[in-house]
Image (tube, rainbow, N blue to C red):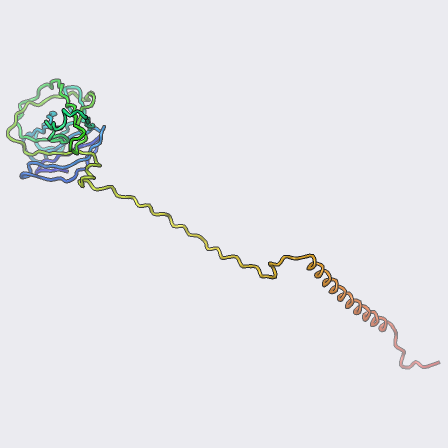
Length: 284
């Protein structure tokens, strides 16, 4: 946040403090400058505070070189002054970033009248003497429409316009005062689109997002074993007949062995059935 001694100032864009770049103090810190990003269609406020000076001060706001009123702080306070736009007793027309109209009319070529402060928001803080409160007079002030030639060599592409009037929640009064000297400090905010600030090296480039592909783990499938030549050869009718003949020969062989065993068993049983002659038996 730009600061100078007990004073600080900032810009709020739609209620949020704007990002400041290249904050610098000049001329014994009587002038403090910086850059802020602006965006077409967004409204903004100018805010400042006094943390220590024990006298009333008045902050006067200038937009694109045009004075737009101000606010009075009666000594140091934790409450900040805020200028939302151009006000009368009951309404406010808010400051709003807007595009500059480009033209090919050569009458505008080289015409830089009052353009040296285009793209600049300033607040000058003066020491003042307060006389009292007075009614706020109706203000018909408007910020002029700015046109630039399309071949104009400038990085300024925006201006500030005033929005349609909105009713104030609390009617406003004005403070009658006079300056007691030159500004104690001037805060200057140069506004540009963020893309221009980045291209000029004032604002950092956006961080590139590098895509990291996910790591997939695959199960290794072993190669299939090749079948042996014996299994790979297809069967033929001759092979089937040969196998049947071999099986029949084996069956005949088994049946022959079985028949021999059966005949042997039968003889043994018949011998066992013959009773022996008694040892004492004799012939008749």
